[in-house]
Length: 173
Image 1 (cartoon, rainbow, N blue to C red):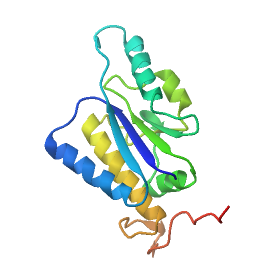
Image 2: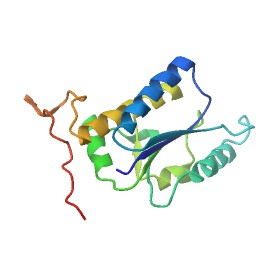
Image 3: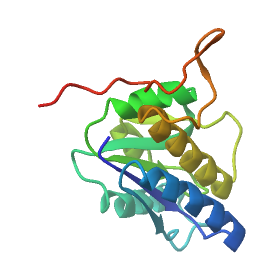
């Protein structure tokens, strides 16, 4: 994976939330370029929901390159374990853009554009918590891919994985 960008639409959280998110973003940054951009919610949210979602999708599109691998957070998406997510991310050679929609969700066209529709849980999560969980899982995945020791899961029942990377590095060009 050649870096990660997290795009999210909403209001900033308290200083404590932003500090927690920032800590995991810095940890991801030890393994790869990592950045986050907050997009302001569209004005007039009490009106036509599809219009608002389409306008928010246009704002997102300004930050997504055609070659990016797009991950849309969607409660109707698929749930992956930490090692499965690490494997999926490790197979990507370009930048990964993860998108957290507004309180209205994500535009259907944006969901169709996504390479992965990821559910962090079937539960509805507040945006600040979803961002924190996403960054923690991105750190866990990047550390797994690097062969780090942060993840304490097991590759096989009863056998510790130790420091072996989840996804072996591909041979050079």
